[in-house]
Length: 191
Image (cartoon, rainbow, N blue to C red):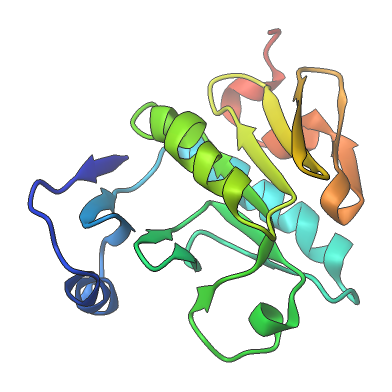
């Protein structure tokens, strides 16, 4: 859940808050901070499943998969904590640092409190970032995945549901959609 903070703060104040905060991660957007509170069981299981599927797929490649604890510095005034991020750029994968700057793929598991930001603000910002090739939205309410893929200067959109095979073309990965929802209690019930 993302709760906006009412007072404008500087980037330096944000970085100090983010560095010293133990229990809460904060996203920073143009002087406003958003506290990222704990997610649901379904949210956690889905994000963990995605990470667990991508980790062995990327083993031995120049790409690395990161979980929700890795901050993405989209610009000087925007810092996000995506649920799953993949970077194949050596400036990210071979540097000893705490932030990503050049991701190829960004995945957000939708939550009621963040879905609007994920579908609007983040989508628009991610599509303008030069290294992002795919932005993926994963529902935690039903088996549903939406994929925005860069094709040259344009973006295409695909949606997937139960029984379908999904593909992340930016990293040549595919699997049944059900794999993303393994062990999520409702995921075996008829849709």
